[in-house]
Image (cartoon, rainbow, N blue to C red):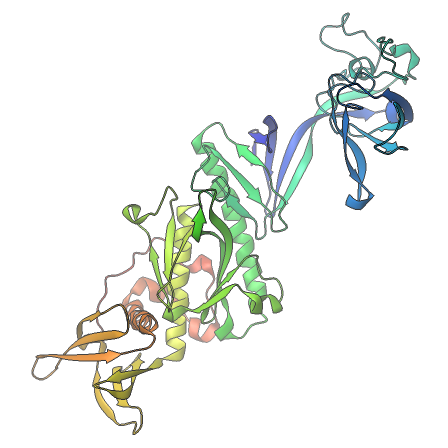
Length: 499
């Protein structure tokens, strides 16, 4: 795919670029003027002498140096400084032989960079001949247009004549698209929002590579163009992620397989106005949901997650329009085993659907693997144990004697309520008398128990859903299905109680 949107970086004016999307890399190109034949005459070094100005010093700014492992570059030249080059930011490398506390005069050894800035007015597809700009129809030579002065003195305002420069016949200059930035797509993230906020840019987004390299804000002429490119880039990132997950899973046992990996934005708990969201990397692997600040690369990285949660003891909810907290769309919440709510957003609706299906799949596979989970509880001042069993339902037993006090199937649960702190009241229907029997239990980890019961019910429902069973296939015997097998079109069935 190719397009010519605009790109803006920081406070700089936007400029036209061209995008090229490959399977694993996004290339951003800018238009530049390059020498396509012959050897550019400006490759040799020149000596430039400048004088300190009354206001503004020498009138130039420099960047780079050995400590940054890049050449020293003139990054800015004041309009008053006529002794060097007008309008040529980042155009020259040079070697400075003096310090900041130099005298009134400084001599610089200056060499032109091979890459010529696009804004220099160069003759295109013609031999480089020095034609004064006032005699040409908008075309001037690189020398005349540069406005370079040697041995500048305040009383000497004459420009260096082109005839004093060495000329070389046979030079050809052409405007061409050259690579400005290469963004590797594996584990890259997209962002339509102003960093940290819920304000969405209009028809614009940026791509941030895993190493932090940013594309800059890419602006599109229409919302349709922007969405097309967002979806295309997101699709390539998703494909690379699936392939990477497949390779990683070869080193993990079946019960530790990765189901999902991807970037989200998390809403800060104690957010301030200019920092409401921060990027996080979520991964569903085996029995756990991991939250990272960066994608895990090594096995050791998995032990350094910011937080991890057991999937069947947390609850995921996709937020509808009336549930959204701010201007961000495509959001979901995760309630932890302690009752804490975490809020996340993704860029596209398809990413939200993939997350939802992946979480359902991870929960189902883990419930199917463990088959039952037991929690300590108190009933009528006695220490008990409640087992949630995938086959049998609910089993309550005495913690000391292990004697079973009562058991009910999932289909017998007709209702429940909790106080939000520690107590759950279950309403079971007696199979013989059809009467409702209430059982009140007290837990130290209320939300973990509630979420676990919900997970077991959801797994029961999934077993009755033909579309889910078909997508699961033989996951328990052959491993974990890829995300591509999870259908985003299947609807979550309504809750049914199964035996």
